[in-house]
Image 1 (cartoon, one colour):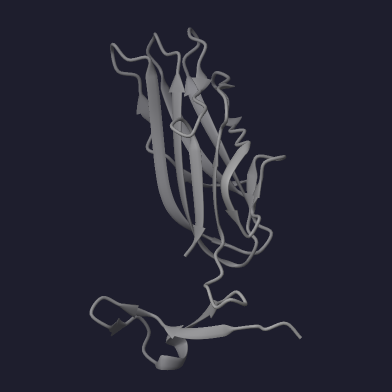
Image 2 (cartoon, rainbow, N blue to C red):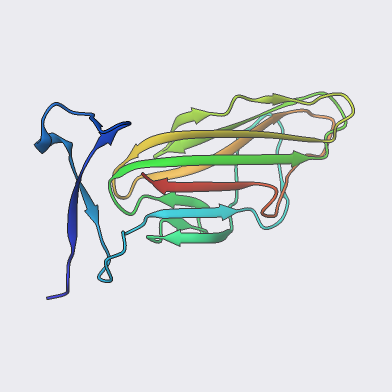
Length: 177
């Protein structure tokens, strides 16, 4: 039988104040690898090259390059994250676009199993700029097998707009907390 290590730790909030009334309910399972290190479930992916952004429609961001994929949750073939285990996940999404000459705006969103769970705040093009970006961050409850996908939207029919590629362009980070 393989060496399986588990640890329970007590949830506390600042200055040792408990988050729940009794000790039993404050216990949280902390998974370990065989070497004693904590088991991690996280992923960081980005768009390797520019992607065309259609006008007045939601476009799925084609995240195709993974920097970190502990737990093998990020699926580059389908450009999505599939939760490897149940839990709360911190999701951070940054999207940059370029090619703007005329007025317009962009939005971003996170979709869980086909339903929208987060919208970014949105952004409008400023005079004299050619790029536009948006970001969002939030925590989502996922069951093993739940799917997260990431979309962007633009309203500007006069310009050819691209989602910026490269690590400094468009990326997503997902971490089990």
